[in-house]
Image (cartoon, rainbow, N blue to C red; front, side, top):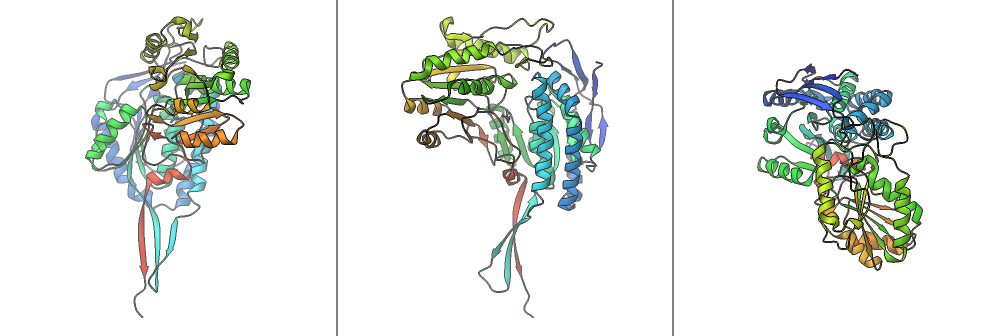
Length: 485
Ligand code: UN1
């Protein structure tokens, strides 16, 4: 396949970058170039902000139904390209083809949901304590939104930020992760074809050094970010100094808790899905599992037996359950963390090495890895690796299991496997998380429900569902009085 040409979308025009060369390669076969072009410069980022600023008044003045119509059309376009764009996603990012296609369809569902939901109501009317008056609280767009998105969900995360931002009347300057520029181009093309007016979305594929204006320019009203806690907090502090609010969806170290009454084969499957789907590169991935000692041996055997059935390889081939990581540095860092913290090699129950995948020379593969650890002080229990690495800990009882699961700074998601109602309530009491799964894996999100975490995992209002509008609108309290006749 000839590489696709990458351009930026500024004020309704596709224009070439004026910065350094930009080459998007496949993590499966790094010599395969997927798309290429040039990065945007800081002047081009400025131009994108100007375009978004100039477009905001007109876009905000459109009836909700007109904006919804464009989003619905974009959803149709995205859905009709699910196979092709899913393939491109898998090629560029490295997740399996079914995951790639599923993600494109998820993006379409998000656009559909936000388009239909926002039309439901425009605000709230309150009783006034004074005669002849009513009080309305109406929702107003915030203005120009900077959107900064990660590599691991190249279309779903941009969709769940862009759809609510746009439907509520905001305009966007978007900087996607440089590893996945092609999918960013695709979603922008869908919005363009759907009839989004010029300047309403602006795509700039730029290095952070050229995009600082997206965090400090006085015309920026808000910044929505997904990525690491380190970067999210750095962005938040920079924006705070300029009075710009930030919504940041950041890291996770999500535990699964397997209690003595768990259905062991089912829990093992869910834990493996949570740990190794998307190559473990998601903030919701299960990166640690705690199992109570009564069933620890049975669970561990079952987990390892099921893991043997899963194949790592070219994500575009059928029957493959895990593709490569995004780049060599991330893979090598994960491997080094395993070596550093496993202690004795017998503690590496599975994986811990780079597999040889025929036909995928130089691909950034890492075997799905399970490490048995002894203490919650272990780095593998505390630090997010963003890799297919699962730490396994055994505790004497439920109480210790909950305590171990509650350790650490993150609070995105957790899973508990049990039939006990009491244990379910206990998990709610013990775990300060944004998402709690009882008898399902830690990963996953739905277009219509709130998504986001506590502690080091999240800053600002939740994403998705109705919650999404909290960040992309502010309220105006309107006192409507009558003049004396
Ligand atoms: C999912 O679990 O399906 O960056 C979504 C991430 C999350 C998305 C997870 N924001 O991994």
